[in-house]
Length: 356
Image (tube, rainbow, N blue to C red; front, side, top):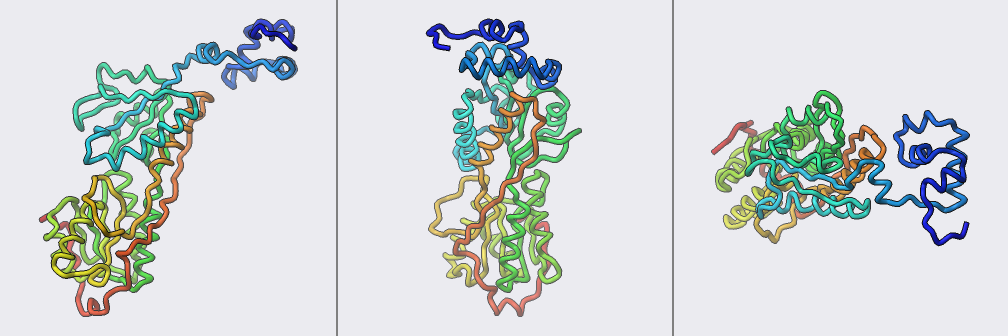
């Protein structure tokens, strides 16, 4: 059909011999509603659409679906302080890139509380302006998460989350597998006395690292030292590692590893000759370091992209979403080497809960 006038749903309805409401349902209806239309009628409408080359008016179609084409982004911690820029910025870059591809705008929900006391369902929150919401943070409010699961509002978490009255749709990094591989790499180089610098929970991302580490210890390796905190004085951490006889130290925070390595170098200790250092992530911006630490890449941008795509799919199809873990690719670095032979004369002290 050659016609300079834009075709409407009424035109399609007349050509197919159905009502305009039927055409609207075929184009925009939920799967359950479409299923009530006889297959022959659906095919007749779709045949006319193909023959005429009809393209729905995007604004009209959006109104029919009741969509604003806005995605909310909520973070449990402020997203832009410089100390946390390395943590949140890659997520936000991936979110923005995919939202642009999907023709959605973004709404950063910043009126949800002050500082770290942020709530999704705070008074005056503009959550419902958005068609759905991406939720980020090291730790989620479990009650709010359960409410999100129970309510008919599309959301996707960035980062693995335990069930909260039902499955939580998420895209996360496979920290357990990534950590386990690094421990196995250390064991293959002769390391049997290991130190762990950082907590073992309660956030899922932290617990997953500890789970991967513990699972990889096996019978051939022992935990010589566990400092269950981050951001402790560098001299206390370094002294504890040396005293324990550990030949490889695993750090939750890059910032801690940078400070300990710099202090060790100042004392004349070279890595990995003195002991190996492995980093399991970075939440706090670290000082610049000339050292490339053995670690793994956390696919933060890709997590943001895939979470955004999943959210759009939930909004537009009613899908419940899924649970996806992305591989953390290893970074070989220069701080993991063979276990020093001299350390075999030391005995593990099995120190835990070091907080000084």
